[in-house]
Image 1 (cartoon, rainbow, N blue to C red):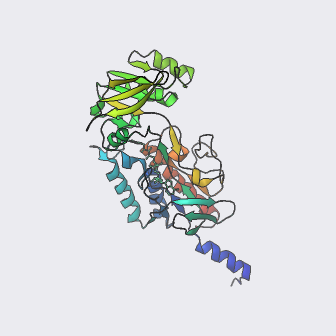
Image 2: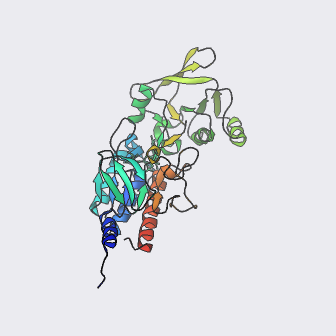
Image 3: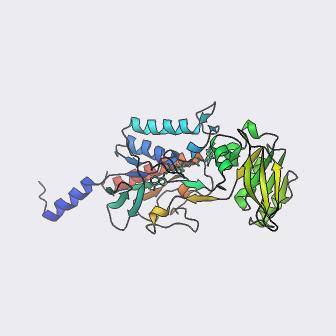
Length: 335
Ligand SMILES: Cc1cc2nc3c(=O)[nH]c(=O)nc-3n(C[C@H](O)[C@H](O)[C@H](O)COP(=O)(O)OP(=O)(O)OC[C@H]3O[C@@H](n4cnc5c(N)ncnc54)[C@H](O)[C@@H]3O)c2cc1C
């Protein structure tokens, strides 16, 4: 029989009281991590986030209409419906869900400490961060209205560019970086013409990407211009541009607007608790791994992926994070 000293008892009690796995975020990455962790008997708890004017539980797909490229839905699926199914599947295996944000973390000692927006102190043996990255918008009222109703405004060409509503139309891409050019080049497969609107007279993108855009006969440029309004009742019909040099305003007809001005990873609540890259995305230690700079903390989905930013890749890394977390807990005897 093992006899415990007072400090041993305290040690075991603290570990017994801690959550084995806390998942922060409720997009495709968070729910997939929860499904895997729950099926591995880790009794996960998901902090799905509080609804606000910039984020809602369920993540980015709650802002879109039809998702056509997630395998398993041959006729397509509404983004919100798909996220409800993800959540339902994780709850089938008794995942606990709290509609709260995690507001701060302390990873400097183990078990890790987290604080929720309700003021609850949580101790966790392992953590998966799946808080996503918000697409940056122009924040014009009509842009937001049409983006949320599938009215021809989008922040993701790969996701939406192939939808029938954008075919053979004049499409506008706003932005000047590599990803804006990638979006514009992708859209040339469907559009009659792509017009890139940029606030300066030259692009920020790498020379090779600029060259590709400039040599594409379907791409035109509208330099020194910003979009100040979007027109259209149910579907976009045009935009209003303002010249950044003389402030002149002109209207332009178009059949779609793609906003490609970057993403903001949801990592501010992490402070300097782990390593982030210069844009705030969570860095992972190795390619094809989700372990972060803090042992026992894993990251999944758009928050650690500045490249692909798709639901299927988010779900894939959610699976990877849960498997890595489980293996780590087992290796430490903490499962
Ligand atoms: C308009 C639009 C259309 C798209 N269409 C498609 C498509 O058709 N196909 C496709 O594959 N991809 C599409 N995408 C991309 C896709 O939505 C993302 O790649 C995917 O949602 C990323 O999943 P995620 O789980 O990493 O993060 P997200 O889906 O962004 O979810 C992150 C979650 O974390 C929560 N959260 C954030 N901070 C906290 C915190 N501190 N505490 C607790 N919770 C927090 C948020 O509320 C949110 O629920 C689209 C994106 C946009 C913007």
